[in-house]
Length: 249
Picture 1 (tube, helix red, strand yellow):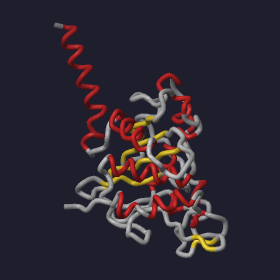
Picture 2 (cartoon, helix red, strand yellow; picture 1 turned 30 degrees about the vertical axis):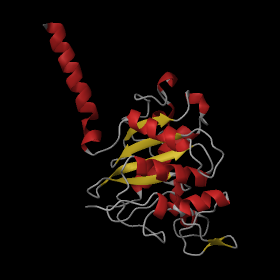
Picture 3 (cartoon, one colour; picture 1 turned 45 degrees about the vertical axis):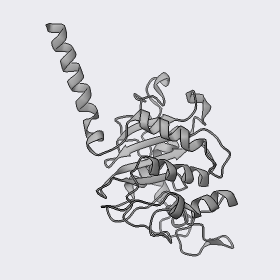
């Protein structure tokens, strides 16, 4: 009886630990990993590399860290923390009525621009980023899970997450390829997770899509991000038709 009671208590504690994420409609590890693997297998305008993905809740707490390869070494190791930075950034600088992707922040954070220095704020918690058992990296119990990672990253790959009610519930960040391919993969991944009920944004399509409006090295509208390849730009340009943001019912 005592063993049964102990097991019941352990299960209850485990459920309480994950309940807030599920209550907000955030995906669990297996769902993110499966969707990421499918998206990475598509053409995204980059090098076709394996990727990291991190999900944070609205408080910036890491809920999921996953990779698309067979092992943690199949993706750039440094991109794990970058994916978390991107998720933190998209969450930290989006609002219930205004979605901003990390790609949208590129121009404004360059020297001489209005938000220069933003990328140096909110530093990464290095203990959270690099502590823990390496064998757990990318697993459901990744050492970053349950911690506030912090960090600001201002190139493509981070997107806020809005549920079917239009509620901002957190953000997702991906990293491991070129910056524009990262954005494309994040966009497709968010769409697959059905967390793209985006209320509005600064792109021409009224959302947080990447803005490719550079002319002679300058963003015309001030929200632009350089394109790494014509293919990546074409894929992103087609998103309003191929992967349109969903509408709140």
